[in-house]
Length: 349
Image (cartoon, rainbow, N blue to C red; front, side):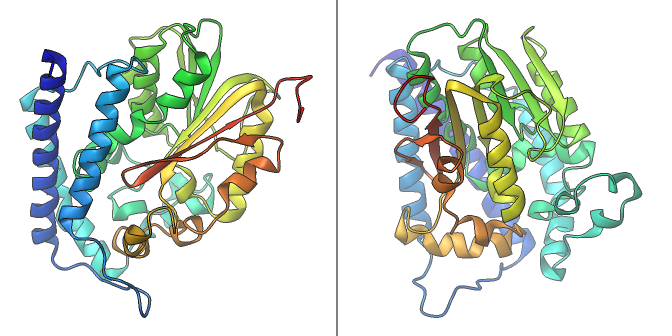
């Protein structure tokens, strides 16, 4: 085992312990969660099975790094003071999140006068988080909250979306190419893209002003990065203007009709010969013993469109717009779905 692999293994073990510990403490502080499983459903997998699958993801992440598909992330080790600061913010918000969960409260953003210009589906508290996606405090907390939810595996899951990009570029630098990330949030995924292809023109698109502010700050080291405020279902870009389109953990938060319009828009802006990559939650049947988790998740974490998403035919959404699906790849509690648009003059064009 080389020095880099030892470094990766040690830091990831510490990362999992740090975030898993916070998940367990937050669970104790919040009290028991509802278990509304369908009649006759199998029990959810135990913690050992989930952590075993997380270890599989981390082994794959390291294998991809070792194979040169993407670089070892430069920020695997973070400032301990920042980690403690983020944890303190997270735990301060736990009582409010627990209260909303008990009361079924996820709609207080709908009456906010400042949010009325936004689509109705967006004006609510996904995950019961304070401020929904509409406050600066929510934007500061988001990446930490997601890592706690996934026991330190969120970044490793995001990096799996780099694999089809690396294969598509086949060693090219990305210079002159344009990548659009739809629903960028804080821009975390694009930092991985630009760390590997710094000459690519990347655009973060999101509907939240505070989240886009965080994305701009995160992407500031790269001169070819931009941020655009717009909804996924109305992309402000010309037809066939993007070489690569990506979207990470967005589709499960869209109503079915909006999801369909977003898919059409993403296909519209993709160039012939281009690549589209989605990374999102597992769906029912992807790993049958995890299906009970998919039934529990939307109730425990207020995901109003998730139950529909886990049954949706995502491949059909894009195939209907002329894109060819590649074989999906599961990555812990997520999966990567990639599609290509045939180049002009090839079969299927």
